[in-house]
Length: 398
Ligand SMILES: Nc1ncnc2c1ncn2[C@@H]1O[C@H](COP(=O)(O)OP(=O)(O)OP(=O)(O)O)[C@@H](O)[C@H]1O
Ligand SMILES: [Mg+2]
Image (cartoon, rainbow, N blue to C red; front, top):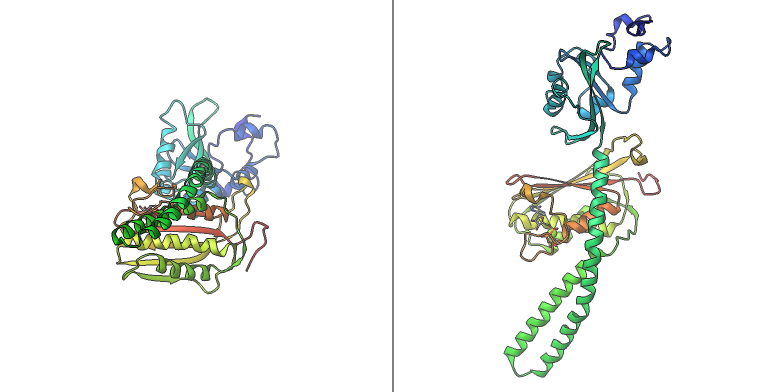
């Protein structure tokens, strides 16, 4: 039986266009006469990988549900037969990859690409579709959403980096703690010895204050490098956010900066450490205050969302998350610094320790959450903290 006739139209199959040029399908069907067009259609549509095939003429031949999802498009059967460059116009990067299928002699296998329009990272393989005479009749793109995998890897890398840095910082901090305490005590004794010299008194007081400042930094470093131990409980993010604003107010110069807090009343409670979550948002609000020079607005908004189902990826289950945005209309973070601001000790401030955001990330990580930054110079800064509602035991709090 010639392979091309193996996809026998079953009843009603005439209404649907055949699977144009999907490589290998005809060949496989020769193994079983029962496997028909409908089966392959269903197989492709239920695949957990994105599948997109085009004809040599540039028309979309196959686009499955996962492909629509990854591309952020609404599934629409009328796209079949339309020019792929038109259907995928919001993804010029994919259009370029597909076009290259007819130009390159070595097609990419297992390459990665970040979709500019959605920020999703995909891993893809591009194949040519050939007929029995080996003539190229189309191209097929098989791809997988790697965004979550990439985020987890990034987190792992950060953990490794922080572990090494942390060990170094911890031993330095321990070494410094005792001499600093010694300086403070001895300067205190010295002050008593010079009761009649106001100049000497004032110098010694300066020494004590500087030693105190240095000690506070050491304490902060030790606080940072110590592993996070969460004391989790049912926590209301609404009260966390209110407390954070009050604390930030007390710690940083706010001036005339307005704060808008928009939290829905039915925000579910989460499984978290109230005190440490408070520190997360206090640090973010303090940074916003410090960036804005006494003028402008800080907006804090929370909402619930569902995280995507990641089939098989690290066994993660879908669930509800709370997304908190802390935005300011300050100067923004220059793009060349965006990758570095979460690093411990990175600061652009004369008095900063550069540990604020590193601590934020550590605490968010310990809650199995994540933090993203969106900023452009002159357009303000937005930190988005995403925290799971469920506890590590999988219990739901509502
Ligand atoms: N809202 C923001 N707007 C502009 N830049 C920001 C903002 N938040 C953070 N940054 C930048 O990120 C850097 C690191 O922030 P981080 O909170 O880690 O340290 P810091 O604020 O400098 O010092 P510390 O928090 O320890 O006092 C800041 O120095 C600043 O350059
Ligand atoms: Mg800070």
